[in-house]
Structure formats: C-alpha cells, structure tokens
Length: 257
Image (cartoon, rainbow, N blue to C red; front, top):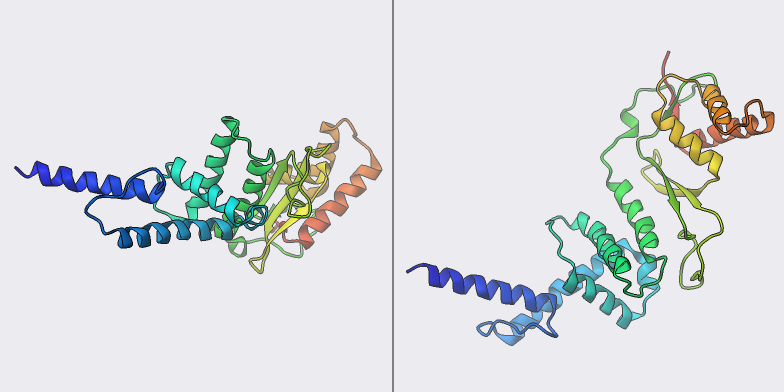
C-alpha cells in the first residue's frame, strides 16, 4: 500500500527537475505553486549561469546576454552531469561542448579548445600539489645539477590561438603552427600562462620524466633526439630556457646532493 505515495513523490520529483532544466517544454508539477516554481527555476539557472561565467570569462564575453542564456540553457537542458561538486561543473561544460562539436552543432570551431584553456587555470589553482613541500636546492645550478620540475606546471598544445581570443579577436582559421602554452602556479599561488616554443615544450616534458640527468645532459639528449647533436647555438638556447624556467618557478631548483 505504500508504493503509490512513493511513486507519486518520485513522479513529482522528476517533473520538478525536468521543468527546472527545460521550463519551455517540460510542464511544472501540478501541485507546486507557479510562483514558487518560478523562483526555483530562476535560482537554479542563475547559479549555473554565474558559475560558468566566472569559470569561462572569455567565452562569456563572446556572447551577448541572449546568446549566453541560450548557451547555458542548452548545457542545463541537454547535458547530464553526474557530480555534486561545483568545482567539476566547468569540466562537465567542456564535455558538453565536445559532444556538440562531435554532433556538428555549429559552435565556433575554437570553442572547445578555448573552454579547455580557461578551465585549465581553475584546475591548476585547485591542484593540491604543494611545490613548497618539495625538498630541493632553489639556488642549484640547473645545468650542472638535476632540475626539479614544479608539480603544478603543465604544457598545453592547441590548434587555435586561444590565449588571444576575445571580443576584439575571433580567428577564422587555426594558427599556422601549434600554439604551445606553459601553465604554472608560482610560489605566490598565482597561475600564469607563458607562450613557449617547441624546444621549451620538449624540454619541460623531458624534465618531467627525468630523475637523474643534469640539465645540460637533458639538453644534449634532446638535441641527439632531434638530430642536432653538437649544435652549439641550440645548446645555448636550451641553457637559457632552463634559466628562464627557474626564474618563473617552473623549475623549483635542483636535487640536493
């Protein structure tokens, strides 16, 4: 005899959630006052809209108010997010944009990469890794010693110049070369993006896997891999890159002897 009330409550809950997601097409539960339902609908939608606008400020500025509402409404209506964490909503928004891109929804072709670029700053700011807890010599010679890469440094590669996109610059074509960006959270907990070249990106990736090779040897190994062994100019460039990386807290120092 108790099944009927439970079933009725469940039906009301589903109708309530469906209307909040898509008030234009899903009718509100008959036993909920319209004024109260409207308050809930607006409150939930505005929370998601404000959260996405804060996490994706560039994407928000690319939309006027009406277009932004439609963008958020599509996410809210169509995407099924299986997380209770507000910090994960931004990642779910990227998944939603990826799904739309695969379906040929007609979004700007750079939108997924731009969203990932903006989300990466949030992700790194929330990363629990603590560079200050790593025991290394901050004044060590990054060429003679073994460089220690920050655990909150990432190399990002894009087809589109995402770091330049904004209301005043909306590219029609991808960049002629891959766009390489270095994302790092420095000692002051500031997240910074640095545009880098291919040699810098390869050095950072190599340092991330390195455990015992001095910085100069890492450069030499990379030049051998590139077929440029003994290239003094490239070796000098590599040394300068290591010093710049240390100055920007990408390299924390060297392993203590």
